[in-house]
Amino acid sequence: FIDLVKDRRGPKLKDDPDLFTGLFWTGKKGLELGLVDALGDMRSVLRARFGPKTQLKLITAPRGLFGRFGWFSSSRGGFSAPEIAAAAASGVIAAAEERALWARFGL
Image (cartoon, rainbow, N blue to C red; front, side, top):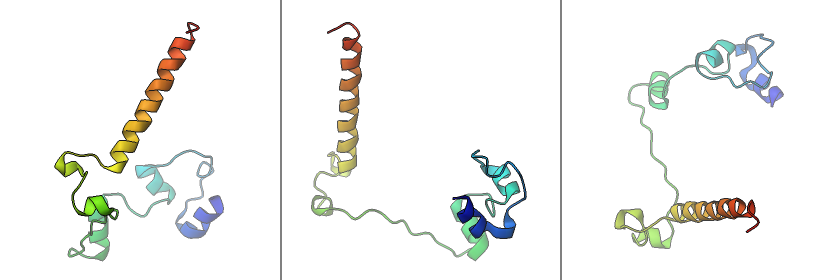
């Protein structure tokens, strides 16, 4: 990873002994160390770099058969696959926590 960063960022990187210690650099410190070119949100940085007419296109995941027709979609009061998966995972975790709690008492 270090070699990749050094290869990609090259002379932009500062010669700082703390740079590759495993710490996580964000914001102004990342800019000072040469890990990023600029600070800002995606739209403003891209517009500054490529001009004021720059537009970002929203890209969404492809919808399945049911999603194409609006069946089982959130907009119709149904649930999407990620929502169902999250609820199932939550249920499994809650059950495991409850079982661990009762196991403390030998039940």
